[in-house]
Image (cartoon, rainbow, N blue to C red):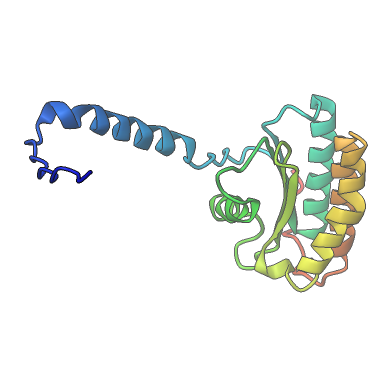
Length: 188
């Protein structure tokens, strides 16, 4: 049996009422994605040890702070620790660069600073190194410190021990680098 010919569909006028639900849905999606994809703030640099995860006790933080201060006084190079829950949506490399640019670790013309960055919930680590230490604290050396020293302790749940041992290895490596001496401190 032959089919009847199709009628051309009549175009209905587009009204605001018809577009409003879709537009509202799109606006909500854009707002949600903007909130979801906002960058993690870089905390202010107030100490050599910054733990925004609450992982390290006050005693552990004070011990690390003193060791890093002593190293800086003796060698001149500045090493710091930053622990954050996550760097998402950025990679740890992107976030590490933002931290380095914000904090400007190390002496001004020597650029001899390094940041041990731990994104605890992401389970990622990175050592961000200033140009003055790139010759000694290379990408390969940093990777070995992370994979051979820090990660095994983290896997055992020993965060303080992993960080302490990792910073010790970083200090040992940097101590062998010929850097300008630290400024003499005044005796008062």
